[in-house]
Every structure is written in C-alpha cells, then in structure tokens.
Image (cartoon, rainbow, N blue to C red; front, side, top):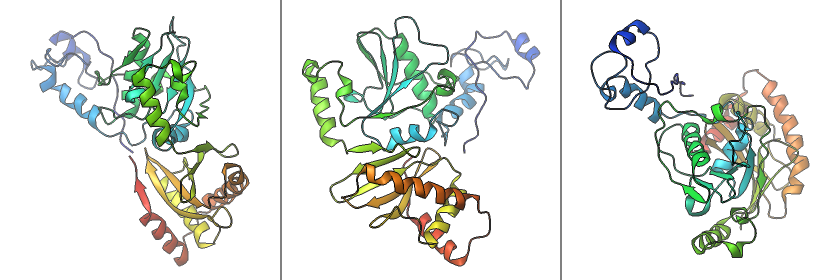
Length: 330
C-alpha cells in the first residue's frame, strides 16, 4: 500500500524569519507555484517544496477508499457495477441549499458531477481522475459541485495538492447502502421524456450497454451479473491478499471453493488494493439462487482464514493456479 503523506491546508506565505522559526521538521504550507517557498529558501515554491507536493499528488494510492464505510462496495461501484446510487452523509452536514448528495456510478456524458436545479448534488464515480489519489480527486470534484450554480454540470480538473480527501468530507459513522438499478433513469428526475436531447441520447446508450446486476443481501459486497454465455458472481473482499489467497487455495484444494453444482471459482480481480474473487455460474442460476451458497461459502472461508498452518503441496499448487488467474483492474 502506498505510504500516506501528511496533508497541509493552503495558507498565506510566511516570512523567511517566520519559516525558519517554524523549524525544519514542521510541514511547509502549500502556496502558489510561483510564490516564494514558505521554507525560506528564497526559491519559488514549485522549484522547492512544491516538487514533493506534486509527487505526493501523482503517486498512486493503492487503497483510496480505505477508512470509508463500505470500502468493498466503493470498489465494486467503481469497477464492476453499471448503474447504482448511494446517499452520502457529509461529516459537517449539508450546506444551505443542498438537499442531498448522491454518489452515482455514471452520470450523463460522463460528467464528474452535477448540481441539479433543486440544488441536490450527484457525484460520478466511474470517471478518469487527474492524480494517483482517487479519493482526493473525488473530494475535489464534490467540493466544486457543492459550490456550483444549480442546474450545472461540474467539469474535471482543479487543484488537488494539499486538498481534502473523501475521508475528510464524509461521515465515517454513516451507513453506505448502494441501490443497484436496472438502468440509468435515475439521471432524470421525473420521466425520461423530460430529459434534454443530449441527456436522452446518453441515457439510451448507457441503458443498452448495462449488464444486469444484482447485489446479494446475505453477504457483503457480492454482486451477481448476467451475460449472454453465463452468469457470474463478483465478490469484493476486505482481507489482505496473501491471507485470502491462502484461504481460497485451501478451499480449492479441498474441492469446496465452488458455490454448488455447475459453478466454479475461475480467478480474481485486483482493484484498489482489494481482491475480487469471481465465480462462473450457469445461466439458470439467478441472484436469489446465489444467496444460500454464498452464505455457506462465507462460513467455509472464515474457517480457512483462521487456519495459519503451512499450505500442503496440493494447496500450494492450487494457490499458484489462483495467482495465475488474477487480473488487475486498477
């Protein structure tokens, strides 16, 4: 996991004497790129401590959603789920004139965010971001959306170095409860017929490409999806990768890694620092039919995770096969 760096808020430049008095071990405030560096070196900020700040922004944060409620579901909505929304709760409450803030997997025309006519905010999750810290980029977009004029989309970009992250803006004790939709009609308050032509066209394209997806209710962050050839279960898990691979290998070697007849653990994704095991399912197996086998598998997995004995030769071979069938998404 990438090492987190200390964050400092923008302040006015210090005098050289004040900067020296602050001490060499204290954080240097963030200022404009062409302003004198607050450390008192006499150089511009971008040629001095600004280099480290720029590196901190571009360095990849492996687990951007770590510490947020529902980290596994954040990953699923970012990478796996076509259409879903979640009501977000801000740490400091909603600003005046903002009745709600909603996270959405995708917005029309891939807008990063939207301030609706009624003042409510939609924040898009599945967008390209300018830095290596997805949490920081999303928080910057959210701040822009909260300050935008009602009825306007929010464009990408903006200063992110030294800025807040989602972990700073969101209430850590509020539940994170995704609602999975069959399409993107949630884009339009009211009926789709009332949408602007460009939004209506985007809605039609998005609905045509959406893969039917259902969130299981009996286990956390497991999503059933339907494709033409077979169905799948994609399950985002919070465990450390090495520990989870060992546990899955124990189950695979014992012949207990499936979810029942006709199902098979085929591999896993890596996404935002977490592992996502994937099962192939027969086309006759819907989301409801997955609930009981998934709950039973969760019990077997818990027992395997608690086993810290060395892997047997068969288990090591199973682990090697699972490792070879990993795909990194982010």
